[in-house]
Image (cartoon, rainbow, N blue to C red; front, side, top):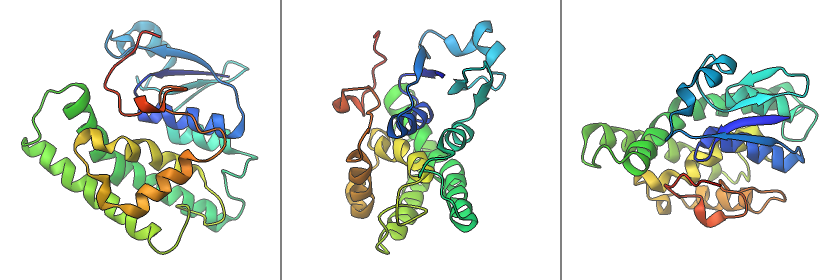
Amino acid sequence: MRIIDTQRSGNCWKVRLLASFVGIELRRTTLSIDRGDLQSAGFTAIAPMKRVPVLELDDGSLLSESGAILFYLAQGTPWWPQTPIAQAQTLAWMHFEQEQHMRPLAPLRLHLALRKDIAPTDPRARNWLQEGHDALAILEAHLATGRQWVSTDAAPSIADIALYPYTRMSPMGGVDLGRYPQVQQWLARIEGLPGYEPLFPGQPHLNLSTLETSG
Protein backbone atom coordinates (compact mmCIF):
# COMPACT_ATOMS: atom_id res chain seq x y z
CA MET A 1 0.00 0.00 0.00
CA ARG A 2 1.04 3.57 -0.61
CA ILE A 3 0.18 6.74 1.29
CA ILE A 4 0.17 10.09 -0.45
CA ASP A 5 0.79 12.63 2.28
CA THR A 6 2.54 15.79 3.39
CA GLN A 7 5.16 15.99 6.12
CA ARG A 8 3.38 18.18 8.64
CA SER A 9 -0.24 17.04 8.29
CA GLY A 10 -1.82 15.72 11.47
CA ASN A 11 -4.39 13.79 9.44
CA CYS A 12 -1.63 12.02 7.53
CA TRP A 13 0.20 11.32 10.77
CA LYS A 14 -2.89 9.47 12.03
CA VAL A 15 -2.69 6.99 9.16
CA ARG A 16 1.04 6.43 9.49
CA LEU A 17 0.67 5.95 13.24
CA LEU A 18 -1.94 3.23 12.88
CA ALA A 19 -0.02 1.51 10.09
CA SER A 20 3.07 1.46 12.29
CA PHE A 21 1.15 0.11 15.27
CA VAL A 22 -0.40 -2.76 13.29
CA GLY A 23 2.72 -3.58 11.28
CA ILE A 24 1.60 -2.38 7.85
CA GLU A 25 4.42 -1.03 5.72
CA LEU A 26 3.34 1.99 3.71
CA ARG A 27 5.26 3.36 0.78
CA ARG A 28 5.21 7.15 0.99
CA THR A 29 4.76 9.72 -1.70
CA THR A 30 5.23 12.95 0.22
CA LEU A 31 3.96 16.11 -1.42
CA SER A 32 4.89 19.68 -0.56
CA ILE A 33 2.29 22.19 0.55
CA ASP A 34 4.90 24.92 0.22
CA ARG A 35 5.42 24.09 -3.46
CA GLY A 36 1.69 23.93 -4.10
CA ASP A 37 1.65 20.21 -4.94
CA LEU A 38 -1.90 19.79 -3.63
CA GLN A 39 -3.16 22.12 -6.37
CA SER A 40 -1.48 20.20 -9.18
CA ALA A 41 -3.49 18.43 -11.86
CA GLY A 42 -1.74 15.17 -11.04
CA PHE A 43 -2.85 15.27 -7.43
CA THR A 44 -6.43 16.38 -8.06
CA ALA A 45 -6.79 13.56 -10.59
CA ILE A 46 -6.40 11.03 -7.78
CA ALA A 47 -7.84 13.15 -4.97
CA PRO A 48 -11.03 14.94 -6.05
CA MET A 49 -11.40 16.32 -2.50
CA LYS A 50 -7.94 17.93 -2.92
CA ARG A 51 -6.85 16.79 0.52
CA VAL A 52 -4.33 14.40 1.98
CA PRO A 53 -4.04 11.67 3.05
CA VAL A 54 -4.85 9.38 0.16
CA LEU A 55 -4.28 5.66 0.55
CA GLU A 56 -3.62 3.64 -2.58
CA LEU A 57 -4.37 -0.05 -2.12
CA ASP A 58 -2.43 -2.81 -3.82
CA ASP A 59 -5.20 -3.23 -6.40
CA GLY A 60 -5.04 0.48 -7.29
CA SER A 61 -8.15 1.50 -5.34
CA LEU A 62 -7.94 4.88 -3.64
CA LEU A 63 -9.26 5.86 -0.22
CA SER A 64 -9.55 9.44 1.04
CA GLU A 65 -10.23 11.03 4.45
CA SER A 66 -8.20 9.98 7.47
CA GLY A 67 -11.16 8.60 9.45
CA ALA A 68 -12.21 6.33 6.61
CA ILE A 69 -8.62 5.14 6.13
CA LEU A 70 -8.25 4.43 9.85
CA PHE A 71 -11.44 2.38 9.74
CA TYR A 72 -10.16 0.40 6.76
CA LEU A 73 -6.72 -0.31 8.21
CA ALA A 74 -8.10 -1.25 11.62
CA GLN A 75 -10.31 -4.04 10.35
CA GLY A 76 -9.31 -7.37 11.90
CA THR A 77 -7.06 -5.67 14.46
CA PRO A 78 -7.61 -4.76 18.15
CA TRP A 79 -7.76 -1.10 17.12
CA TRP A 80 -11.34 -1.60 15.89
CA PRO A 81 -13.50 -2.90 18.78
CA GLN A 82 -15.65 -5.96 18.33
CA THR A 83 -18.92 -5.03 20.05
CA PRO A 84 -21.44 -2.66 18.43
CA ILE A 85 -21.55 -0.41 21.51
CA ALA A 86 -17.76 -0.03 21.57
CA GLN A 87 -17.74 0.59 17.82
CA ALA A 88 -20.39 3.29 18.22
CA GLN A 89 -18.46 4.92 21.06
CA THR A 90 -15.33 4.91 18.93
CA LEU A 91 -17.18 6.60 16.08
CA ALA A 92 -18.67 9.15 18.48
CA TRP A 93 -15.19 10.24 19.64
CA MET A 94 -13.96 10.35 16.05
CA HIS A 95 -16.84 12.70 15.18
CA PHE A 96 -15.95 14.78 18.25
CA GLU A 97 -12.37 15.00 17.01
CA GLN A 98 -13.42 16.33 13.62
CA GLU A 99 -16.16 18.69 14.76
CA GLN A 100 -15.03 20.04 18.15
CA HIS A 101 -11.36 19.19 18.56
CA MET A 102 -9.48 19.42 15.27
CA ARG A 103 -11.63 22.28 13.95
CA PRO A 104 -10.10 24.86 16.34
CA LEU A 105 -6.73 23.24 17.07
CA ALA A 106 -5.66 22.72 13.45
CA PRO A 107 -6.15 26.34 12.31
CA LEU A 108 -4.44 27.63 15.45
CA ARG A 109 -1.32 25.64 14.55
CA LEU A 110 -1.63 26.48 10.86
CA HIS A 111 -1.94 30.24 11.23
CA LEU A 112 0.15 30.91 14.32
CA ALA A 113 3.03 28.47 13.80
CA LEU A 114 3.17 27.39 10.17
CA ARG A 115 1.94 30.33 8.10
CA LYS A 116 2.43 32.94 10.84
CA ASP A 117 -0.13 35.12 9.12
CA ILE A 118 -2.19 36.20 12.14
CA ALA A 119 -1.32 37.31 15.67
CA PRO A 120 -2.43 35.54 18.87
CA THR A 121 -4.51 38.63 19.64
CA ASP A 122 -6.53 38.24 16.44
CA PRO A 123 -10.19 37.57 17.34
CA ARG A 124 -10.14 34.41 15.22
CA ALA A 125 -7.14 33.06 17.11
CA ARG A 126 -8.74 33.89 20.45
CA ASN A 127 -11.92 32.12 19.44
CA TRP A 128 -10.07 29.04 18.21
CA LEU A 129 -8.03 28.96 21.41
CA GLN A 130 -11.14 29.05 23.57
CA GLU A 131 -12.81 26.34 21.50
CA GLY A 132 -9.64 24.26 21.65
CA HIS A 133 -9.53 24.55 25.43
CA ASP A 134 -13.20 23.60 25.58
CA ALA A 135 -12.49 20.43 23.58
CA LEU A 136 -9.43 19.51 25.61
CA ALA A 137 -11.39 20.05 28.84
CA ILE A 138 -13.94 17.51 27.61
CA LEU A 139 -11.18 15.02 26.87
CA GLU A 140 -9.52 15.73 30.25
CA ALA A 141 -12.77 15.14 32.15
CA HIS A 142 -13.40 11.92 30.25
CA LEU A 143 -9.94 10.56 31.03
CA ALA A 144 -10.19 11.74 34.65
CA THR A 145 -12.85 9.09 35.28
CA GLY A 146 -10.00 6.58 35.45
CA ARG A 147 -9.97 5.56 31.82
CA GLN A 148 -6.70 4.64 30.14
CA TRP A 149 -8.05 5.08 26.62
CA VAL A 150 -10.76 7.12 24.98
CA SER A 151 -13.49 4.84 23.64
CA THR A 152 -12.65 1.46 25.18
CA ASP A 153 -10.85 1.09 28.49
CA ALA A 154 -9.25 -2.27 27.76
CA ALA A 155 -7.18 -1.17 24.78
CA PRO A 156 -6.60 1.85 22.53
CA SER A 157 -8.77 2.26 19.46
CA ILE A 158 -8.69 4.36 16.33
CA ALA A 159 -10.42 7.08 18.36
CA ASP A 160 -7.17 7.48 20.32
CA ILE A 161 -5.26 7.64 17.04
CA ALA A 162 -7.65 10.26 15.65
CA LEU A 163 -7.34 12.49 18.72
CA TYR A 164 -3.60 12.16 19.21
CA PRO A 165 -1.87 14.32 16.53
CA TYR A 166 -3.66 17.64 16.95
CA THR A 167 -3.59 17.24 20.73
CA ARG A 168 0.15 16.59 20.68
CA MET A 169 0.79 19.55 18.35
CA SER A 170 -1.61 21.96 20.08
CA PRO A 171 1.19 23.86 21.91
CA MET A 172 2.21 25.18 18.49
CA GLY A 173 -1.05 27.15 18.58
CA GLY A 174 -0.46 28.52 22.05
CA VAL A 175 -2.26 25.80 24.01
CA ASP A 176 -0.82 25.07 27.46
CA LEU A 177 -1.15 21.30 27.88
CA GLY A 178 -0.01 21.70 31.48
CA ARG A 179 -3.65 22.45 32.26
CA TYR A 180 -4.54 18.89 31.28
CA PRO A 181 -2.57 16.31 33.31
CA GLN A 182 -4.80 13.40 32.32
CA VAL A 183 -4.40 14.29 28.65
CA GLN A 184 -0.63 14.48 29.08
CA GLN A 185 -0.57 11.01 30.64
CA TRP A 186 -2.71 9.68 27.80
CA LEU A 187 -0.32 11.17 25.23
CA ALA A 188 2.57 9.46 27.02
CA ARG A 189 0.73 6.12 26.96
CA ILE A 190 0.30 6.36 23.20
CA GLU A 191 3.93 7.31 22.71
CA GLY A 192 4.97 4.33 24.83
CA LEU A 193 3.15 1.79 22.63
CA PRO A 194 5.32 -0.53 20.51
CA GLY A 195 5.59 0.82 16.99
CA TYR A 196 4.95 4.46 17.84
CA GLU A 197 6.12 6.67 14.96
CA PRO A 198 6.80 10.40 15.41
CA LEU A 199 5.63 12.97 12.87
CA PHE A 200 9.11 12.85 11.36
CA PRO A 201 10.12 9.16 11.57
CA GLY A 202 12.96 8.58 13.99
CA GLN A 203 12.98 12.21 15.10
CA PRO A 204 10.49 12.71 17.94
CA HIS A 205 12.08 16.08 18.73
CA LEU A 206 10.54 17.35 15.47
CA ASN A 207 6.93 16.63 16.46
CA LEU A 208 6.44 20.37 16.93
CA SER A 209 8.61 21.42 14.00
CA THR A 210 7.45 24.23 11.74
CA LEU A 211 9.81 23.22 8.94
CA GLU A 212 9.14 21.30 5.78
CA THR A 213 12.31 19.30 5.28
CA SER A 214 13.67 18.28 1.90
CA GLY A 215 14.20 14.64 2.89
